[in-house]
Length: 89
Image (cartoon, rainbow, N blue to C red):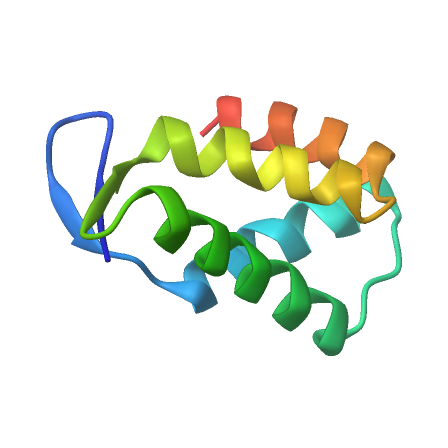
């Protein structure tokens, strides 16, 4: 899976990079996440991406899907922090 970045660059989807972003947002939100939580979240994001995007997606879609999945898994405060964390970078 490829991710088209905001600047047009294309990168490989990186679960570790996504997990690190989620972890950083969790630390800022003072939300406790285990490595298992992060793995489950990133795995679900990748699975959902594969359902509707076969080869590539945009960073915007990845961002929106991450927020949706965080909310669906009960991490509403983390989703809010992730949204502000990602927008600031």
